[in-house]
Length: 237
Image (cartoon, rainbow, N blue to C red; front, side, top):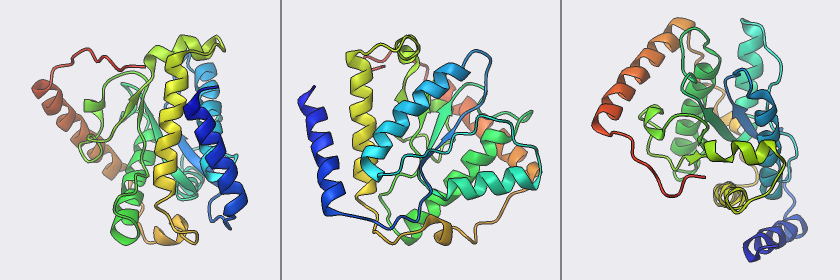
C-alpha cells in the first residue's frame, strides 16, 4: 500500500474517532452523466470508485447516481433538484454531447449546480468547490466558461483499466487526487451547514431558458476552442 494511501486511510480513521457530524446531507456526491450506448458498465464501475473515495471523507456511503430514466415534468425536477442540494459535491462526467437541446437532463443538472455553487460561495465559503468536473470524452474548454477554469480530471485513458477490474499507477493516482480534492473542500464546511436550506430560494428555470443557456454555452465553446487549439497533455490519466 502506498504511503499516500496509508496517510489518507489514517486521516479517515482519525476523523471517525474525533469528529461525529449530524449530517444534513443524504449523499456524498451527485454524479451527472449522459447515457451513451456502451458506457453503462463503465459508469457504474467508476461510480463505485467515486463513492469509495467520497465515503472516506464524508462518511456517507450513498451517491446520487440515477440508473433509470426519470419521466419529464415535476417528478424529474423535484428528484433532480432535491438530490443536488443533498450532496457535498456535484460531479459532471463531460461527454461531447453532455449539453444538448434534444435532451435537457444534464443541462438542467449542471445549470442548477452552478447556481448552488454561487450560493455557497456568496453565503458560506468563498473557496468551496461544489462542482468537480471529470472529462470522459472531450476537453475542458467545452465546459461553460463560468466553470471552465476548474481543475477538471481527464479519465478517458482509464476506461479499459476500470472495465478489466485491474489496478494501475494511473488509477491509484486518480483515486489519491480525487480523495484530496474531496478532503480539502470538506474541511471548509461547518458541521451545521445545509445546502438544502441555503439554496431554497434558487428559482427553477423553464425549459426554454435552459435551451437558451445551452446555445450560449455552445457559442462560448466555439470561441474558446478556436482560440485554444487542443494539445497533447503529459498528465492525462
